[in-house]
Amino acid sequence: MVKALNLKNFGVVEERLPKKLYELLLEECISGEENNPELITGLTNRKDMAKHRHLVVNKENLWEYINQLLINYNKVFPGVENIKVLTRSLPFSLGMPWINYQRKGEYLPQHIHDGIYSYSMWIKIPSPCLFQFTYTNIIGDIITHPLNITKEDEGKIVFFPSKLPHTVFPFNDSEETRISISGNVLFDSNF
Image 1: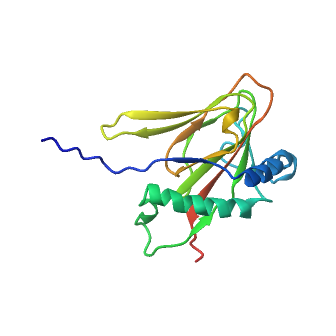
Image 2: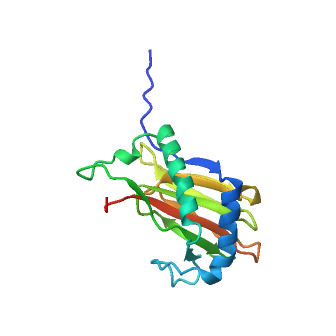
Image 3: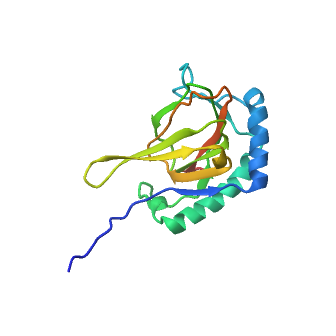
């Protein structure tokens, strides 16, 4: 008899934001492009990259929601938080979330995030676009998992391990701005 051994791995969870939280985030995103502080990254000065602003007003509302999502993630995929690189367990902390403003032709190349967990949520999707995860399988093949994002995905969030590479591809069929929010969950070393 052949016995199958599925090797443990971590995945991605996807769900819809509560309507009230989505509305608060949308409101801040619309005013935030002019009012919120700019987030400076290694990609900031590139002409073809999406621009970033800090999420300020609704950071605490978002953290309450992310904290519950973190608990749910660990029920489905237990173990990511048990990475043994520290001498003791530390509580989680929400890194400063940021708003992504992506215009026609702009993109975010394949990248990873700081922290243990990360998330991306879609706030305004003027035209279909592609968000893609990339990882190596057990035999070394590079696998891509595309998420085809449409207007119906406004208000959805994906929550995933921070070191999972992902790419945000450009769109070319709309003059409107694509808006998303991203952030990280880290260990709180000030504890």
